Length: 501
Image (cartoon, rainbow, N blue to C red; front, side):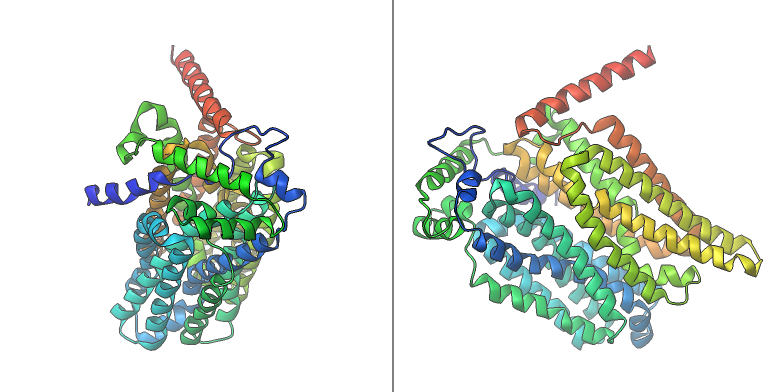
């Protein structure tokens, strides 16, 4: 298994630095303006916006798939006679499928193209939803959930890569954010519809974004970088012309992209063991660590089982409360995107993790009071603590810990290590999600209060982790980030040695 995974994710080391796919050099002369500058001087962005809108339908499907299990839990268990253990398995299998999809996503996206990978993910989603909506045996529904998870794994990698490869530098931040924003909207849609329709119909509705995505792919160009990499010169010129505008001279950009692809091909092929060399260890620790804290902070457990959490906390309108949780994600994600390049990644992450810790502590306190106090007058306090804590938790998670770890991951690794490192970090993220979702109901059965106190402790530890190990990356080139990581870690090490002495 180790060898197989190494081979699979080794393929991803050939991926480009997706943060600047059209800019192989940091500086441009007046006679050779960058893609962004030329685009802002008259090129049309209509195709870029349309292409982004089409592919984030896959992100919408991603969010819908994640949100599906929360509103349908009680109905599915009742209709199919499922035990809590069986439903926990059903919920967690999405993350198993996503791990497989994430491992294979780079190879599929390179072999079939970005659009081809999205077609494969759509087919996987459709198969999964049809199985869940039409069949009755629990093990068959588990297979359907695996198919959906596989689609999630493919889209979680392919969509950000595609958007980054077609988007000019001056628009990349805003348009890339639409990926995370669409995921939160998908979750909200699943929660809202879960209040109105039965779970089998909810599964059938999940096919609609896939149909729209596949249809839309016929009207948007393939990634020019991928076309250049596989040697499809005619299609490459057509795609680049469509993205820059029909009246724009694309010769400069075409030359830059071809030069960039040639440089990537000449880089040494990286292997997963190379990540653990001293040169890259700090980046690996930060990238993996942020994903561990993101997942072990309990976010997927809360989103998968929000309705049951509110029900256990004594909130009568638990479905409405779950919708409020999902609805809060949308504006907070957008607000976090606005703050990211102003306040910086580091302070936003610390505020986010601190707020998550406080929110989990309040939820844990509500369960503790509920279990140890017999005074019925405290019922209102329990409800306020549970609702306020969860809303605060979701709001602060969306502000920073939801999206920033993925941005940090794309910034801290050198160009020749970015693909393989991204695969490793993505795999760790989905593995952590699986661990939490498969164990969460057992944790609640052991101690609901204790479960949230643990999540609070994890998020509090994340604040210390960020403060000690993460330098600020806002407004820096990739080379400057590499240098800042080395100097930051050296200073921390010297300071720790002085304290010990």
